[in-house]
Image 1 (cartoon, rainbow, N blue to C red):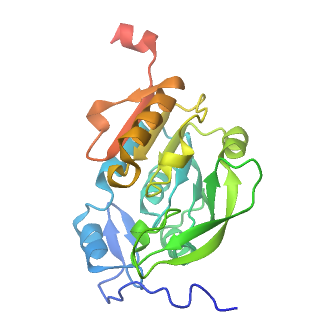
Image 2 (cartoon, rainbow, N blue to C red; image 1 turned 120 degrees about the vertical axis):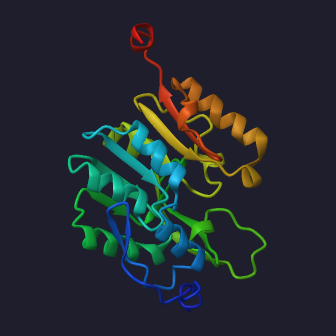
Length: 245
C-alpha cells in the first residue's frame, strides 16, 4: 500500500535556524516552514493573538489541554514559562510530531505530552479521516477543493474521556474548522477558561452561535480585552470577584 505521506511536501526553505521566539528556540529547518511562517516566527508575530490570550488567562500550576499543536510554539512558550504547568496536546498531522519533539528537545521541555490523534465526540474511539494540505497550518478534518490535499487515517480519542481523566483548567483550541463539530452541546463545566480560534469562513454563523451557546451553558463568557480577530477568549465569571472589583 502506498504511503499517503510520501507525496506530502511543504515548501522547502533554508533559513537561519533556530530562531529565538520570545525566549523559545524554534528550529526552522524543515519542509513544513514556508516563507510566511519563517517571517512570522522571526518577527515574533506567529499565533500572537492566541499567545496573548493564553498568557492573560493561564496560571502557573494549571492543567492545559491543547487541540491543534501545530509547530508546538504556543504550548511550548507556556510550558517554558511555567515549569509546573501540566499540558496534554493533540496534533493530528503526523508530519508535525517530529517537529514538536525537536522544539521540546531544543528547549528542555518535559511537561508537555503530545498525542498524534484528534479529539472527537464519537461514542467509541476509532480512526478518522484527516486531510493533509499544502500548508500544515490549514490541514484539518474538513476536506476542501485543494487539489494537493491527501487523506490519511488518524486515531480519534473521545474528548469527554480526556476532560474527565485530565480535568484541565484551560482549553486552547485551533483546529481549522473542526470546532463546529466538537463544541456544540459539549459540557465544559469545570474549565476556567477557553481560548478558541474560530474559522468563520469555514464553519459559518450558525455554527459560531452554537459554539457560543455551549460555552455560555458551561458558564464561560468572552473576555473582550483578550479577544483579537478570530481568536476568542472565554472565562468563567465569579460574582464574588466582580463584586469586589
